[in-house]
Image (cartoon, rainbow, N blue to C red; front, side, top):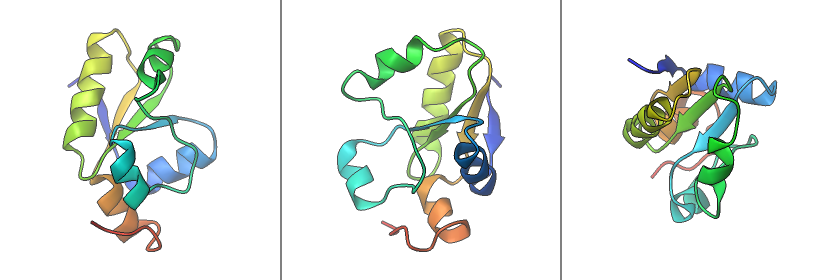
Length: 106
């Protein structure tokens, strides 16, 4: 596997510490329903291109609704030569359940 799994609690802690770049791969309309309360990058509006210019060892953690699209994104970045990749297991749904109940579930 080209990426490692990361729990939502660890993703939250590492994003808050600035240790990883959290990438929410969901479209803006889904993020409008529920978004994490930490800094994150998106893929739209040039976001993908900006991320691809990062050093290949930059730690990137991908987030989606439940973990499927984020795993696909992690695989894509692995194919682009990135090597420090994480899939946030359970996605925003698990984040709501395990980290921050204020985040709406959908």
